[in-house]
Image 1 (tube, rainbow over the protein chains, first blue to last red):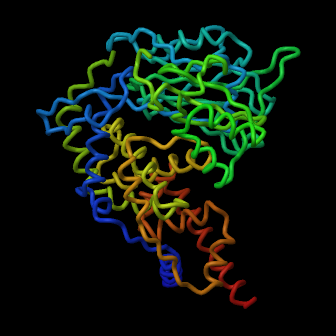
Image 2 (image 1 turned 30 degrees about the vertical axis):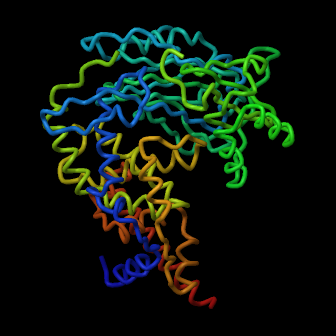
Image 3 (image 1 turned 120 degrees about the vertical axis):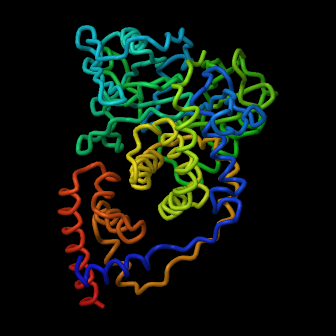
Length: 300
Length: 173
């Protein structure tokens, strides 16, 4: 490194903003930081059908610590969630295979699904985007993974790409193909799953629309104000949210229960509460709703 | 439903993760804060990155943990920017705390900031990783998932472009 480089580095260092961080978050032993560590260390023995609650999470006490089980549900909506065309986006709880299940590069049927093993991961890509998705799930189950693969009609540039991902615990990442991105910036051509992934997930790939079938549009990119508006719907009564959405020219699609079942509007009483939201194309908003406004527990 | 975790995770992995967390938390938090539009968004980056670290604790190269974490955080940030996603409940307390972070914007000559902003995003990030996170070439290679040789070439070019941008900026002001 030359003196000039060092001078330039000093200049760049000056460009960094400075932060004054509250003590509880600034040090790893601060209460907020330490709580995060303890919560994270509960992850490996995750039970895919148990929701996280704070009281369920116990500190790990070194080698003798026995971890309580919990899971974290989260949803990731990629450039185009394409929920509306999917029917129920339900978690399918399939039997978890024994730990000794063979994990390896089982050849995919009819070359529809390419599964390759790379170190501690499986890379999954769709090769034939008009094939039967049930075969994909079976293929993954053979690898001991509880991952439901679905296909949704998509425009040509999104065919074969990951357009929606929902996972019960973090770990699955997308395989990016920079330089081969859709107009919306979606370059995800597959998923990478750790072999020891124990959560459940729903992954939706874009497929070629059948004759006469419309492709799903992209989910809108929201600005901060729109995001805030959507976020503000959480915790409100369904009847109030319906009015607000109507005033904005938007319509709702509902998800109910732990399995996020798509449910018709007339089956959702106005007295229920919204606990989560997501935007879809064509001014449609997904509302996750429950009787009491809490995220549902397993079995509900 | 859950399968038993590998035996090593109860002992060595937990010890290693705790040490890793204590050693790298502060650096990772600052990395995330510097790259987040709002301080509270950094909580999810930190949480998601450490979740991956815990799940892949056996894959993390010794003595390069920090660079490895930056590499994961980089992908987490990319996903965060690309996706409309729910905030993780895991980080709710940290998020609340980070909402109280005070940010002081740097006071640097406008032409320096302008010259830096003119660079391609990849150059900016590479130079930030060097100047802000003080990563060396081998650590950059790990964080950016490319060879050390490629990093050196990219860094050389980024430095050259920054020098040119600075010169141009000075000439025009």
